[in-house]
Length: 423
Image (cartoon, rainbow, N blue to C red; front, side, top):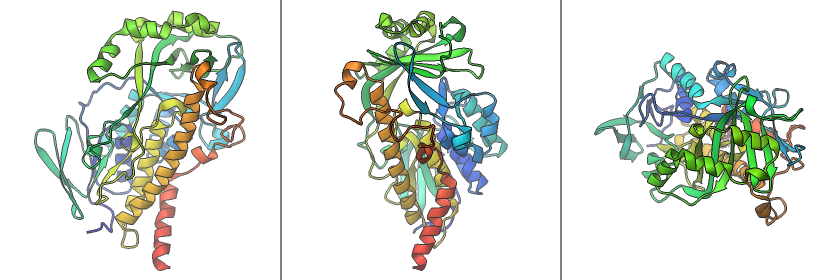
């Protein structure tokens, strides 16, 4: 039976950024939901996250933007610097004048805490230590699933917001596996006061050298701490191997220090200041494009990294997850005999897949720009991002990325489906 009215219960698998934002959006639209999170309530939430105008518009719509704004670094432009400290390119991560919001870098813990507080204020149920294990039934009447230690629950819809290693995805796409890019990003945190920053040197910045790119991004609202790092080729590991590398701070430190003399003085000062105990890394993974983000019944739906893991180079991974859930919540609220679930979800999926494809193209161009000079030289014209392309931001050319309002888009899809039925 095709669902022809807003769902009476949505199970959200995953209590991270996307899952909690979806819960808030559904609640505001009077759609009951419950969140199931594998980890404990106080799971590790280290690191910062870049939020562009398209994500901030979503967070604003669920009452979170103003809560995090004052505890975040706000900026507009990431500058690209050469070895002589000259600005060669600019990438607009945001602009209040052009796109309605400046970009924001906020600690993941800060954002999650604000989302959790809002979920609790709205009395949205959230279960921790509730590992999703399997789908029991999935048909036109709904879904039943198992979690935790043999507990089961029914739902009209199950939303997989459980990340790149999604267990929900595995229930109907069991052969899809994350693909390792061959690169890790080695990083640390340093004090700004320890850096030798030239006059009129704007941060955040990406310094381009022979061996690749080195990132310098303020980490705190006052800019007193700087997130620094660079990518390195590294062989793929199993989970034990990655854990071993994560715990080997000295090895990560030596990897970061490679080719130190090849960098300009500002980068050398960052390398000198990097403390061993603050070393970290992440391995770049993606998943191949999926034909469908839903099960055959349309009752199980993937969002965020479970559906499309986008490398972080252009800062759009989490941003696109926010777009997914904002559009999904709104279109679910519009379900009716004229806007049935199957047609509504197909419309949502088509739009989102096309948009993610375009974002991925931009991301790959940015990835190419950060490769070592010798590797960049082998690439064809157009493979490397440049601010002389249509993505230059100071004239508003990034409106295609930052301007679309996902709630408004979903409203338009509903009207289009109603119009098609009348015709």
